[in-house]
Length: 446
Image 1 (spheres, rainbow, N blue to C red):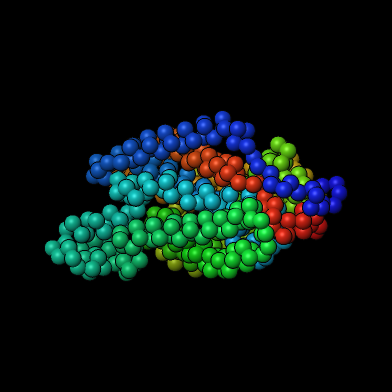
Image 2: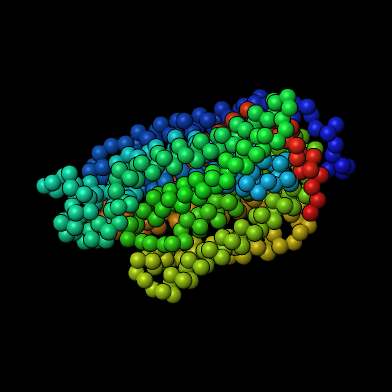
């Protein structure tokens, strides 16, 4: 922006991304996502007793892909909530981008549905198999699951019985639905308040105060949703493992990489001729500083979890790291130390580079690549022992060709994410042009 933006520079009806400009991309991404989801669901559906190594491997691939894009959509919800609750002025120009990334979250539910299949759960969550087996063997099937497990006397059943108040089938499925519905309502309502302001004859500040009030309790809904789905989906892969820092660790990566997506979208839209009046180098600088801050925060939480738990040497806490230091997984651990923290920390340290679009675009894509490895590191090492135990009772860490399923699942869910994001972008104005703070944001200087 080479001059001070005035109200005359803001189009009366804002700026709209015509669907015709992204129609081809939406068609192909939507088709791939739909066909891939249907094919994957059919493949994953079936009797869990008829186990196969291929189905087990792909179950982990699907969880990995869904959780990766789930964290990015969650991050979009976080930035929307934070913007509203902090009454941010500078972020008004990009608030609609935050809302559109966050509003992908309700549609992630469609891709998470296969996780409700018992034939998928049998490979991913061993505790569910233990529960189902215990109930089927119990003489009194109406007894509390804790009592059934204690009477069963199998290995680790005592430990699982102590966690049965939380880790039980009914409560897990209930949380699955409630968390999705709760946060979906929050981000839908906040986006609706924002979009309705675009067409209001006297926009004023009423909706801004409503959004702020809703975000004050909505951010608690977000925190609970992120924390417990991270626990249910990922920590639950090994019910004997425990971490008090897991939710914060997932949050750090979620916030960082959703901001990277927002940066990519804002730059690409400006390259296409949009947002140029309201988003400029100062916004790039501020978003770059947020990426820098959360790079450090991710590293702090990651190191704290590793250092404190490894030093304490409590079996229930260290087993996560023991597995990831076995075979070649430790190579990926080192890559994350230098690639996820060291490189972006040094590259984002300077202020001037944050205002360069090409640099920020490369950094954002790079960070998303590191997030790919981070989520892979969270989930996939559990695949070998889990699937190996079910299929042939011979646990092993590497299964030949399993990575092909990882890529296929990632492409399918990724296409779905892109489709719904483009749908959101083309359905409303690209920025809240009738927000009273739009000129303040367009002329921000830091």
